[in-house]
Length: 338
Image (cartoon, rainbow, N blue to C red; front, side):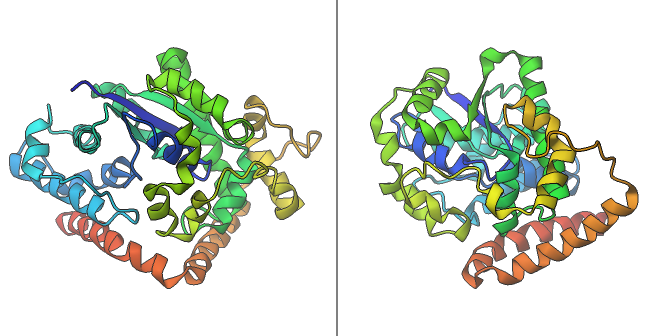
């Protein structure tokens, strides 16, 4: 079977689960909830040393399969056999493990298009290109100030507005640069607000791009089993069991402080404008953040992360416990070897 790989890129909290669930409704499309294979395992590769050693590579594949087993939103209907994954990899590379696992999931659903919605994979686009995965890219973007508001409420991610703005700016700039490098025929820009206003039009555009047949059933995503599993796997995703919330934008104007909005625009205002968003403070003086300010922001950020975790529902934390212990064990083995 010939597969069409599709990678969403951008910044999390931009409606990627909504879009994933819509596309997952279509015949021939497989869009599972991502275990963030590349993000979590690229930093851990030193634990496996030489991957041309078959035992080391098999251990890597085993650990990636365990990650999927611990994913907060379960992957059902596919049996991931380590030996089969190893045999299907063209080279002993993490990107190959990633590709083969998504292909096997697609096969289990009789699909020839697989979609990874781990937007953070924009950081690994070079490896995806160099190692021959060569996916089509969907650059999904949302007003960064609304992204910041969403991150502030989530169990995951940065919490201080400076750190969120910095991350958003870097990931959006990387997505824009990728389009310049590989050509716009392999990357499609999708604005979250447009998806809310006219989902059918945006979905038809995406289907033409990835080679899928559009079906209005995509708009009925919130009745699907996958939406139910996702919504009941964490507070962050509870909205995916509802129809499109057409006015779910510009919430930052009421819920972020003027100081937070100003800091975000001082950090990332140029990218906001490049993506078509208007600034709240267009005439503010340029500000260069000094080391003392950034250090203060970092201390507050760390504290806010701890508070977010303490406020999280015990069941949400429990679902992540085995996953975090699994990754920590691998990380500890790196430190022991060092």
